[in-house]
Image 1 (cartoon, rainbow, N blue to C red):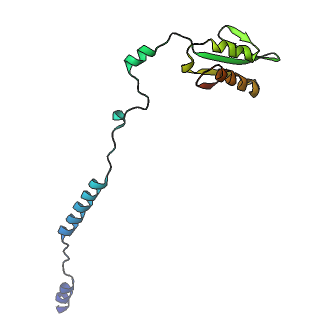
Image 2 (cartoon, rainbow, N blue to C red; image 1 turned 180 degrees about the vertical axis):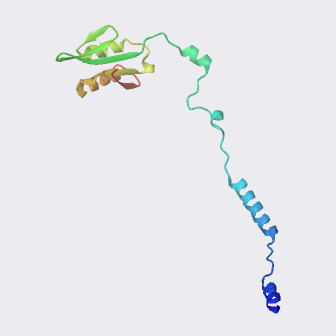
Image 3 (tube, one colour; image 1 turned 45 degrees about the horizontal axis):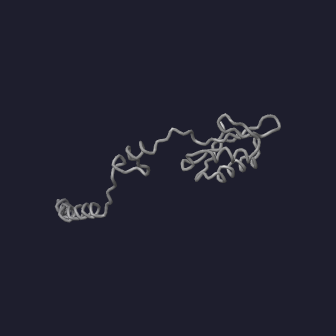
Length: 140
């Protein structure tokens, strides 16, 4: 029976001190709180495009935007600006020079079957007429 008593002596109860574990957890918690960067919620971020309602009302215009449609009718490529239809690029430039709202920019809408050179001529006519920005729109 001495064997049993000796066997009991070898199996001591192991105790762990939780104090050091709690210290490590608190140190990690403090570290993560200090090094975290807090970001503002998206609804509180300012948008890149801001408008002031008073300024927008002052700048509102009743003028039509400059839209040049480039289409192919039969064998011919024509340019259409509003009710004016022509196949001459210099005529397009002359019509566009009559627009007063050049700071708002111009749009060139080109159908898929039109060769690129005619679209480039329309963009060039808009630039030559004095428009500060010219945008390319796909045909509908």
